[in-house]
Image 1 (cartoon, rainbow, N blue to C red):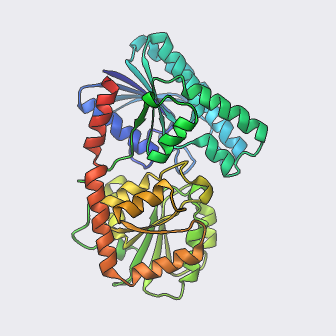
Image 2 (cartoon, rainbow, N blue to C red):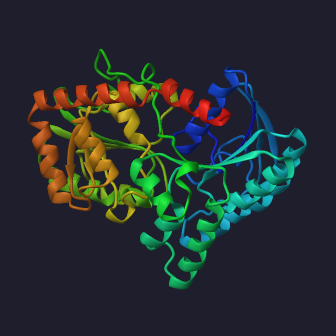
Image 3 (cartoon, one colour):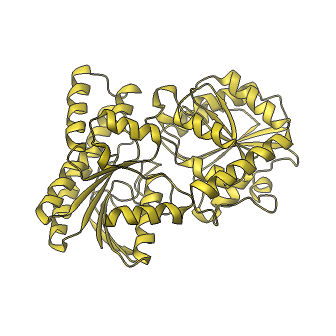
Length: 405
Protein backbone atom coordinates (compact mmCIF):
# COMPACT_ATOMS: atom_id res chain seq x y z
CA UNK A 1 0.00 0.00 0.00
CA UNK A 2 1.11 3.54 -0.76
CA UNK A 3 0.41 6.02 2.03
CA UNK A 4 0.93 9.77 1.74
CA UNK A 5 1.15 11.52 5.13
CA UNK A 6 0.46 15.26 5.12
CA UNK A 7 1.23 16.82 8.47
CA UNK A 8 2.60 20.03 9.90
CA UNK A 9 4.77 18.23 12.46
CA UNK A 10 7.00 15.28 11.64
CA UNK A 11 9.93 15.29 14.04
CA UNK A 12 10.44 11.77 15.38
CA UNK A 13 13.20 12.85 17.78
CA UNK A 14 10.79 15.14 19.64
CA UNK A 15 7.40 14.59 21.25
CA UNK A 16 3.70 14.93 20.58
CA UNK A 17 2.14 14.80 17.12
CA UNK A 18 5.49 14.75 15.31
CA UNK A 19 6.64 11.77 17.33
CA UNK A 20 3.45 9.78 16.69
CA UNK A 21 3.51 10.51 12.94
CA UNK A 22 7.14 9.43 12.80
CA UNK A 23 6.59 6.19 14.70
CA UNK A 24 3.56 5.37 12.56
CA UNK A 25 5.44 6.03 9.31
CA UNK A 26 8.45 3.98 10.40
CA UNK A 27 6.28 1.09 11.62
CA UNK A 28 4.34 0.93 8.35
CA UNK A 29 7.54 1.10 6.29
CA UNK A 30 8.94 -1.92 8.14
CA UNK A 31 5.72 -3.77 7.25
CA UNK A 32 6.41 -3.28 3.55
CA UNK A 33 4.22 -0.25 2.86
CA UNK A 34 5.50 2.65 0.75
CA UNK A 35 5.26 5.80 2.84
CA UNK A 36 5.90 9.41 1.87
CA UNK A 37 5.56 12.48 4.08
CA UNK A 38 4.93 16.12 3.18
CA UNK A 39 5.68 18.27 6.21
CA UNK A 40 7.40 21.38 7.60
CA UNK A 41 10.90 21.64 9.06
CA UNK A 42 11.07 20.69 12.75
CA UNK A 43 10.19 23.73 14.88
CA UNK A 44 7.89 22.49 17.65
CA UNK A 45 7.67 22.87 20.63
CA UNK A 46 10.42 25.55 20.78
CA UNK A 47 8.76 27.62 18.04
CA UNK A 48 12.06 27.96 16.22
CA UNK A 49 13.35 25.99 13.24
CA UNK A 50 15.81 23.29 14.32
CA UNK A 51 19.49 23.51 13.35
CA UNK A 52 20.18 22.00 9.94
CA UNK A 53 16.81 23.10 8.56
CA UNK A 54 15.44 26.29 7.04
CA UNK A 55 12.04 27.90 7.27
CA UNK A 56 12.46 29.42 3.82
CA UNK A 57 13.55 26.53 1.61
CA UNK A 58 12.53 23.02 0.59
CA UNK A 59 14.43 19.95 1.70
CA UNK A 60 14.09 16.26 0.84
CA UNK A 61 15.41 13.54 3.13
CA UNK A 62 15.16 9.81 3.74
CA UNK A 63 14.32 8.65 7.26
CA UNK A 64 13.97 4.98 8.23
CA UNK A 65 12.72 3.97 4.80
CA UNK A 66 10.36 6.96 4.53
CA UNK A 67 10.74 9.73 1.93
CA UNK A 68 10.21 13.09 3.65
CA UNK A 69 9.71 16.39 1.83
CA UNK A 70 9.97 19.44 4.09
CA UNK A 71 8.37 22.69 2.96
CA UNK A 72 8.89 26.30 4.10
CA UNK A 73 6.79 27.98 6.77
CA UNK A 74 6.87 31.15 8.82
CA UNK A 75 7.49 30.69 12.54
CA UNK A 76 6.57 33.70 14.71
CA UNK A 77 8.84 34.59 17.61
CA UNK A 78 5.83 35.28 19.82
CA UNK A 79 2.64 33.33 19.19
CA UNK A 80 -0.71 35.14 19.02
CA UNK A 81 -4.01 34.10 17.48
CA UNK A 82 -3.51 36.02 14.23
CA UNK A 83 0.17 35.07 13.94
CA UNK A 84 -0.74 31.44 14.42
CA UNK A 85 -3.20 31.66 11.51
CA UNK A 86 -0.55 33.22 9.27
CA UNK A 87 1.94 30.56 10.39
CA UNK A 88 -0.45 27.74 9.44
CA UNK A 89 -1.43 29.37 6.16
CA UNK A 90 2.22 29.78 5.16
CA UNK A 91 2.78 26.02 5.36
CA UNK A 92 -0.48 25.20 3.56
CA UNK A 93 0.56 27.49 0.69
CA UNK A 94 4.18 26.36 0.39
CA UNK A 95 3.34 22.66 0.66
CA UNK A 96 0.49 22.61 -1.87
CA UNK A 97 2.71 22.29 -4.99
CA UNK A 98 4.69 19.46 -3.35
CA UNK A 99 1.48 17.74 -2.30
CA UNK A 100 0.01 17.93 -5.77
CA UNK A 101 3.24 16.61 -7.26
CA UNK A 102 2.60 13.37 -5.33
CA UNK A 103 -0.41 12.74 -7.57
CA UNK A 104 1.97 11.17 -10.10
CA UNK A 105 3.04 8.68 -7.43
CA UNK A 106 -0.63 7.66 -7.08
CA UNK A 107 -0.94 6.97 -3.34
CA UNK A 108 -3.72 4.67 -2.17
CA UNK A 109 -4.49 6.80 0.90
CA UNK A 110 -3.87 10.46 1.69
CA UNK A 111 -3.66 10.81 5.50
CA UNK A 112 -3.75 14.34 6.93
CA UNK A 113 -3.49 15.53 10.54
CA UNK A 114 -5.47 18.30 12.23
CA UNK A 115 -3.92 20.58 13.26
CA UNK A 116 -3.69 22.13 10.76
CA UNK A 117 -7.15 22.52 9.25
CA UNK A 118 -5.57 24.71 6.55
CA UNK A 119 -4.04 21.54 5.07
CA UNK A 120 -7.29 19.64 4.54
CA UNK A 121 -8.47 21.29 1.27
CA UNK A 122 -5.16 20.47 -0.40
CA UNK A 123 -5.33 16.88 0.83
CA UNK A 124 -8.84 16.46 -0.57
CA UNK A 125 -7.78 17.94 -3.91
CA UNK A 126 -4.70 15.74 -4.25
CA UNK A 127 -6.71 12.62 -3.39
CA UNK A 128 -9.40 13.49 -5.91
CA UNK A 129 -6.84 13.98 -8.68
CA UNK A 130 -5.31 10.53 -8.16
CA UNK A 131 -8.34 8.59 -6.94
CA UNK A 132 -6.94 7.97 -3.45
CA UNK A 133 -9.01 7.43 -0.33
CA UNK A 134 -8.87 10.23 2.26
CA UNK A 135 -8.28 10.01 6.01
CA UNK A 136 -8.39 12.94 8.44
CA UNK A 137 -6.89 12.37 11.87
CA UNK A 138 -7.90 14.90 14.53
CA UNK A 139 -5.23 15.11 17.21
CA UNK A 140 -6.94 18.13 18.72
CA UNK A 141 -9.83 20.38 17.73
CA UNK A 142 -7.79 23.45 16.90
CA UNK A 143 -10.75 25.60 15.81
CA UNK A 144 -12.75 25.00 18.99
CA UNK A 145 -9.63 25.41 21.14
CA UNK A 146 -8.64 28.70 19.50
CA UNK A 147 -12.01 30.29 20.29
CA UNK A 148 -12.71 28.66 23.66
CA UNK A 149 -9.27 29.62 24.95
CA UNK A 150 -9.62 33.19 23.69
CA UNK A 151 -6.89 33.08 21.03
CA UNK A 152 -9.57 34.16 18.53
CA UNK A 153 -12.71 35.99 19.66
CA UNK A 154 -14.97 37.08 16.80
CA UNK A 155 -18.37 35.32 16.86
CA UNK A 156 -18.84 35.83 13.17
CA UNK A 157 -15.41 34.37 12.42
CA UNK A 158 -16.11 31.38 14.66
CA UNK A 159 -19.39 30.65 12.92
CA UNK A 160 -17.77 30.86 9.49
CA UNK A 161 -14.68 28.81 10.35
CA UNK A 162 -16.65 26.17 12.26
CA UNK A 163 -19.04 25.77 9.35
CA UNK A 164 -16.12 25.37 6.95
CA UNK A 165 -14.55 22.80 9.30
CA UNK A 166 -17.75 20.73 9.40
CA UNK A 167 -18.07 20.90 5.61
CA UNK A 168 -14.51 19.68 5.17
CA UNK A 169 -14.76 16.87 7.71
CA UNK A 170 -17.81 15.38 6.03
CA UNK A 171 -15.83 14.98 2.79
CA UNK A 172 -13.26 12.54 4.15
CA UNK A 173 -13.66 8.78 3.75
CA UNK A 174 -12.37 8.24 7.28
CA UNK A 175 -12.09 10.61 10.24
CA UNK A 176 -10.27 9.41 13.33
CA UNK A 177 -9.42 10.88 16.71
CA UNK A 178 -7.84 9.82 19.99
CA UNK A 179 -10.58 9.58 22.63
CA UNK A 180 -14.25 8.73 23.17
CA UNK A 181 -15.26 12.30 23.94
CA UNK A 182 -13.46 13.56 20.85
CA UNK A 183 -15.24 10.92 18.75
CA UNK A 184 -18.51 12.23 20.12
CA UNK A 185 -17.52 15.74 19.08
CA UNK A 186 -16.91 14.46 15.54
CA UNK A 187 -20.49 13.20 15.46
CA UNK A 188 -21.71 16.56 16.77
CA UNK A 189 -19.94 18.16 13.81
CA UNK A 190 -21.93 16.01 11.41
CA UNK A 191 -19.41 13.31 10.56
CA UNK A 192 -21.16 10.04 9.59
CA UNK A 193 -20.65 7.48 12.40
CA UNK A 194 -19.74 4.84 9.82
CA UNK A 195 -16.75 6.95 8.81
CA UNK A 196 -15.32 7.55 12.29
CA UNK A 197 -12.41 5.54 13.66
CA UNK A 198 -10.89 5.40 17.14
CA UNK A 199 -7.12 5.83 16.75
CA UNK A 200 -5.69 6.56 20.22
CA UNK A 201 -2.18 7.64 21.05
CA UNK A 202 0.10 4.78 22.01
CA UNK A 203 3.30 4.03 23.87
CA UNK A 204 6.21 1.66 23.38
CA UNK A 205 5.81 -0.35 26.58
CA UNK A 206 9.26 -1.91 26.13
CA UNK A 207 11.02 1.43 25.65
CA UNK A 208 9.11 3.12 28.49
CA UNK A 209 8.99 0.94 31.60
CA UNK A 210 9.48 1.26 35.36
CA UNK A 211 13.14 1.82 36.23
CA UNK A 212 14.92 -0.89 38.18
CA UNK A 213 17.33 1.68 39.67
CA UNK A 214 17.27 5.33 40.69
CA UNK A 215 17.11 7.72 37.73
CA UNK A 216 20.50 9.38 37.04
CA UNK A 217 18.64 12.67 36.72
CA UNK A 218 18.40 12.82 40.51
CA UNK A 219 22.13 13.29 40.95
CA UNK A 220 22.43 15.49 37.83
CA UNK A 221 19.82 17.88 39.25
CA UNK A 222 21.23 17.74 42.79
CA UNK A 223 17.98 16.41 44.21
CA UNK A 224 18.54 15.34 47.83
CA UNK A 225 18.14 11.62 48.57
CA UNK A 226 14.67 10.75 49.75
CA UNK A 227 13.03 13.80 48.17
CA UNK A 228 9.73 13.34 46.36
CA UNK A 229 9.90 14.56 42.75
CA UNK A 230 6.79 16.06 41.15
CA UNK A 231 7.55 16.14 37.42
CA UNK A 232 5.96 17.96 34.51
CA UNK A 233 7.50 16.98 31.18
CA UNK A 234 6.17 18.07 27.81
CA UNK A 235 5.13 20.98 25.67
CA UNK A 236 4.92 24.30 27.49
CA UNK A 237 2.08 26.01 25.64
CA UNK A 238 -1.15 27.86 26.30
CA UNK A 239 -3.35 24.76 26.50
CA UNK A 240 -1.42 23.32 29.45
CA UNK A 241 -2.26 26.03 32.00
CA UNK A 242 1.23 25.79 33.50
CA UNK A 243 0.75 28.74 35.83
CA UNK A 244 -1.01 26.40 38.26
CA UNK A 245 2.25 24.45 38.60
CA UNK A 246 4.20 27.58 39.52
CA UNK A 247 1.55 28.53 42.08
CA UNK A 248 1.63 25.05 43.66
CA UNK A 249 5.42 25.20 43.83
CA UNK A 250 5.18 28.55 45.63
CA UNK A 251 2.72 27.13 48.13
CA UNK A 252 5.02 24.20 48.90
CA UNK A 253 8.30 26.11 48.92
CA UNK A 254 8.80 25.38 52.64
CA UNK A 255 8.39 21.61 52.13
CA UNK A 256 12.04 20.62 51.85
CA UNK A 257 11.20 17.03 50.94
CA UNK A 258 9.32 17.94 47.71
CA UNK A 259 11.08 19.04 44.51
CA UNK A 260 9.30 20.18 41.35
CA UNK A 261 10.96 19.48 37.99
CA UNK A 262 9.58 21.24 34.91
CA UNK A 263 11.00 19.91 31.64
CA UNK A 264 10.22 21.00 28.09
CA UNK A 265 10.01 23.90 25.71
CA UNK A 266 7.29 26.02 24.19
CA UNK A 267 5.69 29.42 23.93
CA UNK A 268 4.81 29.56 27.66
CA UNK A 269 8.20 28.47 29.03
CA UNK A 270 9.55 31.98 29.61
CA UNK A 271 6.46 32.90 31.62
CA UNK A 272 6.79 29.73 33.71
CA UNK A 273 10.45 30.47 34.40
CA UNK A 274 9.55 33.98 35.50
CA UNK A 275 6.81 32.72 37.81
CA UNK A 276 9.26 30.28 39.42
CA UNK A 277 12.04 32.83 39.84
CA UNK A 278 13.81 32.45 43.19
CA UNK A 279 12.19 29.10 44.08
CA UNK A 280 14.79 26.65 45.40
CA UNK A 281 12.32 23.74 45.15
CA UNK A 282 12.07 23.99 41.35
CA UNK A 283 14.43 22.60 38.70
CA UNK A 284 14.02 23.64 35.06
CA UNK A 285 15.15 21.47 32.15
CA UNK A 286 14.99 21.96 28.38
CA UNK A 287 13.51 19.27 26.17
CA UNK A 288 15.58 16.11 26.71
CA UNK A 289 16.89 13.61 24.12
CA UNK A 290 14.48 10.86 23.18
CA UNK A 291 16.98 8.19 24.23
CA UNK A 292 16.77 9.52 27.80
CA UNK A 293 12.97 9.66 27.96
CA UNK A 294 12.64 6.57 30.12
CA UNK A 295 15.20 7.92 32.61
CA UNK A 296 13.35 11.23 32.68
CA UNK A 297 9.92 9.70 33.27
CA UNK A 298 11.42 7.40 35.89
CA UNK A 299 12.67 10.47 37.77
CA UNK A 300 9.12 11.20 38.89
CA UNK A 301 7.47 10.03 42.06
CA UNK A 302 4.43 11.99 40.92
CA UNK A 303 3.68 12.97 37.32
CA UNK A 304 1.92 16.32 36.99
CA UNK A 305 -0.54 16.76 34.12
CA UNK A 306 -2.30 20.15 34.16
CA UNK A 307 -5.03 21.08 31.69
CA UNK A 308 -6.99 24.29 31.38
CA UNK A 309 -10.72 24.03 32.01
CA UNK A 310 -11.54 25.51 28.61
CA UNK A 311 -9.43 22.87 26.85
CA UNK A 312 -11.36 19.91 28.30
CA UNK A 313 -12.20 17.24 25.68
CA UNK A 314 -10.71 19.36 22.90
CA UNK A 315 -7.45 17.50 23.43
CA UNK A 316 -6.30 14.41 25.33
CA UNK A 317 -2.67 15.06 26.29
CA UNK A 318 -0.38 12.68 24.45
CA UNK A 319 2.13 12.76 27.31
CA UNK A 320 -0.27 10.69 29.45
CA UNK A 321 0.73 7.45 27.68
CA UNK A 322 4.36 7.68 28.75
CA UNK A 323 3.38 8.61 32.29
CA UNK A 324 1.25 5.49 32.58
CA UNK A 325 3.89 3.22 31.08
CA UNK A 326 6.55 4.56 33.48
CA UNK A 327 4.71 3.05 36.45
CA UNK A 328 4.49 6.27 38.45
CA UNK A 329 1.46 7.94 40.07
CA UNK A 330 -0.26 10.62 38.00
CA UNK A 331 -1.85 13.82 39.31
CA UNK A 332 -4.04 15.62 36.78
CA UNK A 333 -6.13 18.77 36.80
CA UNK A 334 -9.39 18.06 35.01
CA UNK A 335 -13.11 18.61 35.47
CA UNK A 336 -15.28 15.61 36.44
CA UNK A 337 -16.61 13.67 33.47
CA UNK A 338 -13.92 14.78 31.04
CA UNK A 339 -12.00 12.13 29.13
CA UNK A 340 -8.79 12.79 31.03
CA UNK A 341 -10.53 12.44 34.40
CA UNK A 342 -12.27 9.25 33.27
CA UNK A 343 -9.04 7.59 32.14
CA UNK A 344 -7.26 8.40 35.40
CA UNK A 345 -10.17 7.32 37.57
CA UNK A 346 -11.04 4.14 35.65
CA UNK A 347 -7.43 2.97 35.48
CA UNK A 348 -6.69 3.82 39.12
CA UNK A 349 -3.40 5.40 38.08
CA UNK A 350 -3.67 8.60 40.10
CA UNK A 351 -5.66 11.53 41.43
CA UNK A 352 -7.84 14.18 39.79
CA UNK A 353 -8.21 17.73 41.12
CA UNK A 354 -10.14 20.68 39.64
CA UNK A 355 -8.35 22.63 36.91
CA UNK A 356 -6.73 25.98 37.68
CA UNK A 357 -6.89 25.42 41.46
CA UNK A 358 -3.35 25.63 42.90
CA UNK A 359 -4.55 25.06 46.48
CA UNK A 360 -6.11 21.70 45.60
CA UNK A 361 -3.13 20.77 43.46
CA UNK A 362 -0.65 21.57 46.24
CA UNK A 363 -2.75 19.61 48.76
CA UNK A 364 -2.84 16.60 46.43
CA UNK A 365 0.94 16.71 45.94
CA UNK A 366 1.34 16.71 49.71
CA UNK A 367 -1.10 13.82 50.09
CA UNK A 368 0.69 11.66 47.52
CA UNK A 369 4.14 12.63 48.77
CA UNK A 370 3.25 11.35 52.23
CA UNK A 371 2.10 7.87 51.13
CA UNK A 372 4.60 5.72 49.23
CA UNK A 373 2.29 2.71 49.25
CA UNK A 374 -0.52 4.60 47.50
CA UNK A 375 1.91 5.98 44.93
CA UNK A 376 3.22 2.49 44.20
CA UNK A 377 -0.30 1.10 43.82
CA UNK A 378 -1.29 3.88 41.43
CA UNK A 379 1.88 3.45 39.40
CA UNK A 380 1.32 -0.29 39.05
CA UNK A 381 -2.28 0.31 37.96
CA UNK A 382 -1.14 2.80 35.33
CA UNK A 383 1.44 0.36 33.98
CA UNK A 384 -1.20 -2.38 33.74
CA UNK A 385 -3.52 -0.03 31.83
CA UNK A 386 -0.72 0.91 29.42
CA UNK A 387 0.10 -2.74 28.72
CA UNK A 388 -3.55 -3.60 28.14
CA UNK A 389 -4.78 -0.57 26.19
CA UNK A 390 -1.89 1.47 24.78
CA UNK A 391 0.67 -0.91 23.28
CA UNK A 392 2.05 0.55 20.05
CA UNK A 393 1.91 -2.70 18.09
CA UNK A 394 -1.69 -3.49 19.03
CA UNK A 395 -2.91 -0.01 18.06
CA UNK A 396 -0.94 0.22 14.82
CA UNK A 397 -2.02 -3.26 13.71
CA UNK A 398 -5.63 -2.13 14.08
CA UNK A 399 -4.82 1.04 12.15
CA UNK A 400 -3.16 -0.97 9.38
CA UNK A 401 -6.29 -3.09 9.08
CA UNK A 402 -8.46 0.01 8.83
CA UNK A 403 -6.16 1.42 6.12
CA UNK A 404 -6.71 -1.69 4.05
CA UNK A 405 -10.47 -1.68 4.61
